[in-house]
Image (tube, rainbow, N blue to C red; front, side, top):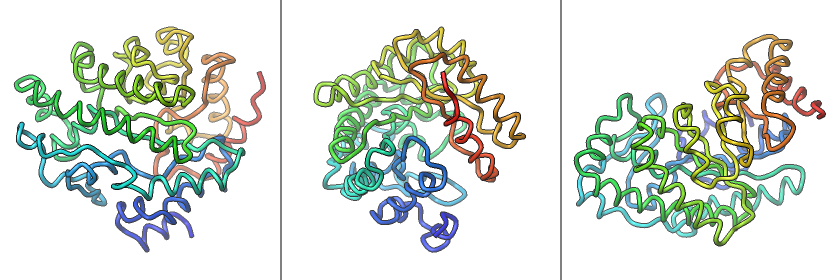
Length: 314
C-alpha cells in the first residue's frame, strides 16, 4: 500500500506513528524503492510528550497542537520523566523488526527532538513564527525554562539509549528551532543540554554515532561541534565548503543538497550532487538533502539522486 493510501486509511498521524506494523511498513517504503544506505524510523520528535504527561496531537493542515501549553512553574512540575519502554514500546518493537528486516544492507536510524525545540513546542502550544512565548519565559523566568529543559534532557538521553538498545545504529537529534536563538542564548538554553545528552549517551553507548541537525544554524556553526556530536547535518543555506572549514575537520558532516534541486533537470541534480561532494571532501561526509524531501518532488528525480550518489567514487 502506498503512503498516500495508508494516510487515507489511517488519517491520524499519531495512529500511523504509534502502530508497530504501520511504522515498519512506512519506514521500509523508501528503502525498498530507492535502496539508500539508511532506513529512518517513521516517527515524530513529539512522540514522547504523551509519556511525559503533556497531551498533544498532530493535526492535518495545522501541525502539532499542545492542548495545555506549559507557561508556569506549576505546569512544569506536572511534567513527568519519559520511560520509553512503558510509554512508547511500539518504537522499540518497530526498530527491532527493522533491524532484522534490513540486516546489514542498511543502517537503521532513530531520532529524537532536542530539549530547546521540544520546549518551544510545549510552551508556544505548537508551531510558531516569532517564538515570543518561549522567549518571554527564557528572559523573564529563566529558572522555569531551565527546569523544563532539564526534564527533556534526561528523557531524551534515555530515549536515545532505548532506541540504540532496540536496533538503531545511529540517532539524529533535531534542534529545529535552535536558530531562533541568538548565539549567546544558544549557549545558555540549548548547547549545555545537548552536551549533557551526548555525554550521557557516550557513557553507556560510546560507539553510537550521534548526528545533530539544526536548520538555519549558519550563525551557530562554530558552536555546534561543542556539543560533542559525531556528525553535524547542514541545511542548504550554508555552503558545504564554508561549513567544512567552520566546523573543523574532526567532525563528520551530513547534507546538504537543497531539496528544491530535485525539481530541476537530471543534469542539474547531477551537477549539484557533485558540487556538494567535492566541497565536502573525500572523508567523513554523509551525502543527503539539506532538509526533508518536499511534497510533490518527482519520484524519478529522487531515484536519480540515489543513482548518482551510489555511482560516486573517490
